[in-house]
Image 1 (cartoon, helix red, strand yellow):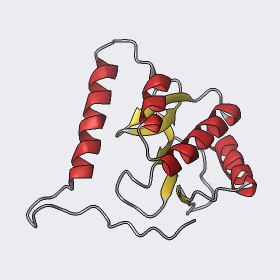
Image 2 (cartoon, one colour; image 1 turned 120 degrees about the horizontal axis):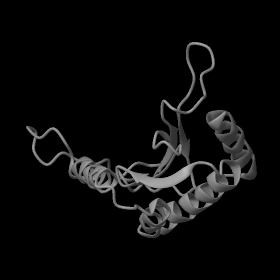
Image 3 (tube, rainbow, N blue to C red; image 1 turned 90 degrees about the vertical axis):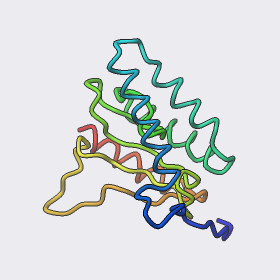
Length: 153
C-alpha cells in the first residue's frame, strides 16, 4: 500500500457537531429509510453497485472484490446501502455487515464491519470491525469468508 496520508474529515466550525461527511452519510441514511418505508420496491443491489461505482479506483476495486466474496459466501444476504455505504442484511432487513471506503471519511484505510445481527459472539469480547487495505490478500479473503460464514450462522 502506498503511504498516502489523508487528512481526516474536519469540522467546519468549532461549534458544529458533525463533519460535512457525517452529515452526508446521515442524509443518505434518511433517504434509504424513506425509500424502504414508502413501500416502493428498492433495488438494493443496484444502489450498492452505484455507490461502488462512485468510489475512487482503489476503494472501488476493494469494494467490488468484497461484494463478490459476500455474494459467494452468504448468498442469502441482501445487498443494500447503509449511510451511503455498501451493506448486506438479512431478508428481514436487519443489517449484518458493511464496507466503508477509505474515502468516505478520509481515513487511511477502508473498513469491513459487522453489526449486532452478525452471529460473531465469542466469549465476552470479539472484534466487529476490520481495517482493510488495497493489499487485501488471498489469506485475508479466507479470513473474511470464515467470518461471514460464522456471521450468518
